[in-house]
Amino acid sequence: MSDFSGYLCEGNLVAGQWIGADSGETIDVTNPATGEKLGTVPNCGAVETKRAIDAAHAAFKSFSQTDLNTRVGLLHRLREALLDNQEALAQLLTAEQGKPLAEARGEIGIGAAYVQWFAEEIRRAKGEIVPAPTGDRRLLVTRHPVGVVGMITPWNFPSSMLARKIAPALAAGCTVVAKPATATPYSGLAWAKLCEEAGYPSGTVNILTGSARGIGGAIMEDARVRKVTFTGSTEVGKELIRQSADTVKKVSMELGGNAPFIVFDDADIDAAIQGAMVSKYRNMGQTCVCANRIYVQAGIHDAFVEKLTAATAALKVGNGTEDGVEQGPMIDMDAVEKVEQFITDATEKGGKVVQGGKRHALGQTFFEPTVVTGATQDMAFATEEIFGPLSPVFKFDSEEQVVEMANATDFGLCAYVYTRDLGRVFRLNDALEYGMIGVNSGLITTVEAPFGGVKESGMGKEGGSQGLDDYLDTKYVAVAGIK
Ligand code: NAP
Image (cartoon, rainbow, N blue to C red; front, side, top):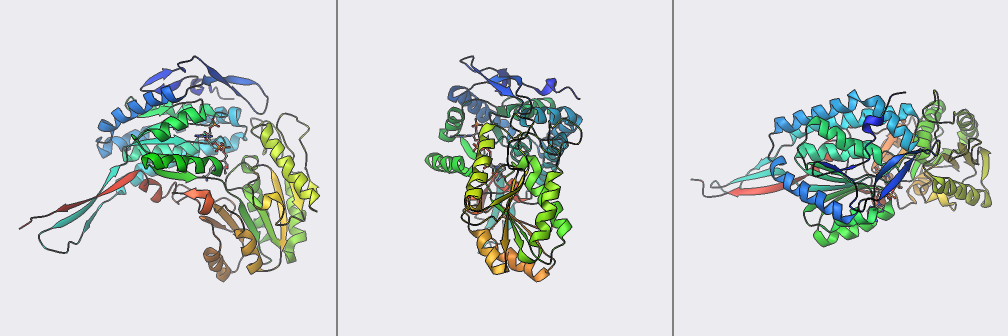
């Protein structure tokens, strides 16, 4: 086991200094697999956040003017720092969040890939010269970093959710004030240390832990913070959108999901099972793009259920640091209780638990991977995000019917479709109200493509060329009087 103590930062980085809260208060951080205390982090609030914004605002003046080559070089060093310490960072992530080590290694790896992607993409952040209506003018469109960016991130991907924000911000020449989730602060604070190691100037990256309302409130009300990027629940996202109005900030919102996973009669069933397993049970079902509702066409329904049940029963549950473990603990007892409520609601309305269905014998927050059949549109998980290792299987007859069922939610993040009918793929691309669609794949996140949802799953994209746009303002310059 790699020693992660070098990245277990018990301070906050503000204006180039590692600080505690002014009050001296701290918050305990525990390992969800064992219940053991890992350490503490400062319980900071509005006052410390204002200092961080002061520093980020001051640093922006020079950092935004840094040569492109310098910014790209810093990003390459940041990527190297991540990869040189991938094992320690992955161990830290598993210790505070619970996911299996293989997934944690993958998360650090994709974080490094985002840093590399934006180091490459910033070189192509071109402006435009627009044809002018008269010969005495030249019309230019130029691009500029937006300014100080506030970032608030969730516990389920505590490292890579920051990667998708910090990398484009620093590539563009913005400075950062970030708040990671309280349950998993160390993977977020590790970014502060990594940025220091890469050589970012003091005040460029500030990361604070503590009161969500205190830190979040100070970020939202300060006019010097020109953009806020948030990943988390739709409920909190809506509150932040409301708060952003007073200072007219740009906002990017990566919010909740309720992904339909649709399997048609003509699908390759084994491929669909493999896709369902990775989509449903990654991170113990705690991802925003997890299959939330599995719709299976009547002709293959029973065969699919049989295979899904067997594959679910075979999942190895345990501490994420143990070899071969595929399912770690859930993040906390609230998450366990929420899954139990979904199961109770479903069984009261006629659903049948065919696999799992209860807390795991390992105790803590471990839960048995579960399959419920006979799912119907009046059950709570049809419209709400499960965020746990529970697969509800719905039966459907026609394409038209399943499109209607799939769209009957306020969310619109990701949908999955298994079919071999090419015409159907394009019909569904038009009909499904989702920001991302996986066709014959249950895992589609990649740095090259824009990740993000529609409807109440949010606005803005992360990754792809679009992932940089939100960190740049365009300016139009009319140069007149040319003879
Ligand atoms: P959450 O409760 O909304 O928390 C997310 C972050 O917001 C945390 O840092 C939290 O701080 C902070 N926060 C909470 N209340 C706040 C407030 N009033 N003002 C400012 N900040 C506040 O979400 P979560 O439970 O951590 O994460 C799970 C959710 O994230 C799910 O809905 C999931 O679908 C979504 N998610 C979406 C994506 C995507 O890309 N679309 C990716 C991953 C996750 P504390 O930790 O201190 O409470």
